[in-house]
Length: 150
Image 1 (cartoon, rainbow, N blue to C red):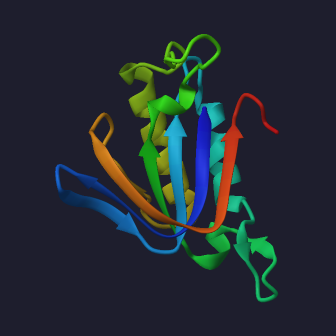
Image 2 (cartoon, rainbow, N blue to C red):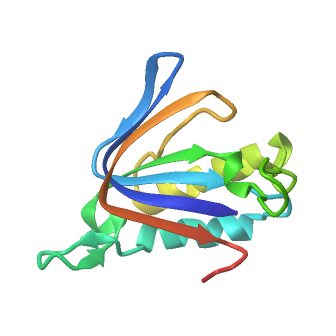
């Protein structure tokens, strides 16, 4: 399971010209699910996401988490995060989980994050053609993979 976490001042998802969801200050999280991912991957990534200290404290040092600041989270499923670019110029998505695994794992991640934050995590719509807009604050962008655990 792979996440791209961006610290944002705002983010939104629009589907078919209609605003689907939006947040203010917080995290925009792109969620990629791979074949073989398990609830243990979700648990680890949700805990890391909620506790990651990438928001400034009173001295401007990145020392606060989204939980500490009471920020929002917008989580959007993105199978292209699992792209393999090893051969050629056309990415392969052979390692991306199919709907039967990806949907419940994405939903579980959103549920775990909601519990950790004590409020609803905003989402995209699985499988939809979404237009994602955000203002990356910093910019701060973190890539985290449950298989690498770096």
